[in-house]
Image (cartoon, rainbow, N blue to C red; front, side, top):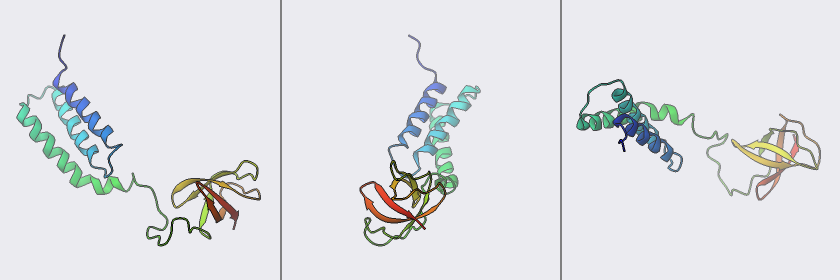
Length: 148
C-alpha cells in the first residue's frame, strides 16, 4: 500500500485544523490551517523543504497570519449586536424594537431580527416584511410583537 504524500498530509492536517474552528471559539485555528495549506502548496510545486523547515515555515506563517489578519477577519465572522452593552435580565425585553424578516401572519407567525439574531414571532395582527416591530413579550423562543 502506497503512503500518502507529504503535501496531501499537510493539506488534510490543515483541513482538520480548520474544521476544529467550528467547535472552538476565538477565530484562531483557521490561521494554522492556512499555514498548513501554504506548506502543502510549496511541496506540491516541488519546493524541496526538509521536515524541520516545513515545521518552522508552518509556525511562522500561521503566527504571522494570526497577528496580521485575526482582528480584520473576526469582525466578519461575529454576529452583529445593535446594543452591545445590554444591562438587565435577558427576559426583560419588552419595548425593544426588531425588524420583521418575513410577513407575520396571526395564524402561522413569522420571523423577526432582534439584536442580530433570527427569532420566531407571532402577532395578533398581520405585519408585512420589513416593518419595525415592538416586542410585547417573550415566550421561550417566540417573541410576541406589534407594529410600531
